[in-house]
Length: 104
Image 1: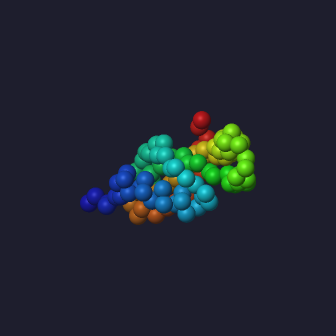
Image 2: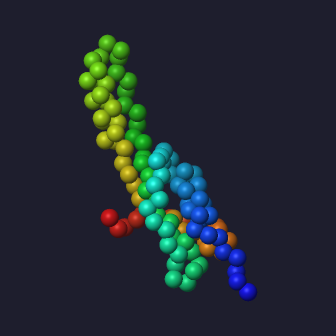
Image 3: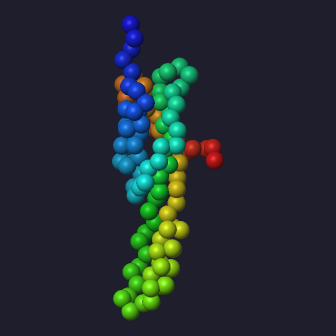
């Protein structure tokens, strides 16, 4: 008899849930890849996300627009993208953990 397995959509949803739960400040999640292991026991879901830096100090109202633009630019540059591989059991749908994506 076939063992009931979760599908890719479910595995991806579980992985994304765990990104937001485990990685503080993760935003703008992007699915980078998903594959199932050779023995079909687990999904490996690669997700990248932005980490928010600390908010820049707000400029006083009297500051010129270009100062505000500069602050916005600094805020953007402080965001970093990270990529991790999340492991999900293909039978139970249990989250198995994650590791840093070593490629790229």
